[in-house]
Image (tube, rainbow, N blue to C red; front, top):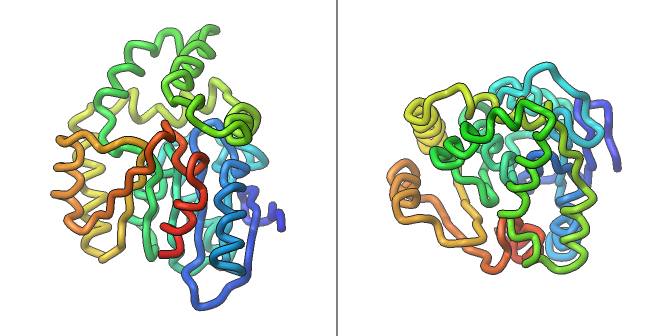
Length: 258
């Protein structure tokens, strides 16, 4: 069922029961269609499970905003989750959605987080953005996004998944500048402190956290993550680039039902 009355466009699957509902959040410029392969697998191995795939603000069928700063977006998401009657869901996010899922669980009731290929420390990526900022703010902004996509290794995906990456996306300058604003204007050390604080809140509330990635985590990053969340689960789904959920939808579905 497609739903537009919760403030964000969404596809609502399954029915409410004693299983924790799933909230699915896509990555930057993409939309909720990216969860279709995983949802098909869920329907097979966990039939009837309530799962809602939202379009993030400014994406797909969801309304645009003047600001896409993370705190504001998380509150919009919480309003939509509440309107949908999703009580303490498992929050699943890919890329940008993984960061938002983390911030959501740090601030609102949640029974788990599954972060799909989103590092929470972005110092190196921030440096790249700062170098590209003049281009990003001008007419050549598509070049910046195209260079990002070129590093996501879409070629590793099966043909249907590659087509989904190509078509279920609407890159816009306002989305890139809006969602990346905090990376551009917040020092890396401050961002690290904020993410450490978020993970401390998740740990204090006993919320399970699962990081799914296409490649082994760099040792320094994994050390930081495990120091903040000693019980974190890390799963590598190889040969998937930046899209483990599209390369291995059955495996991710099993993680969501575990």
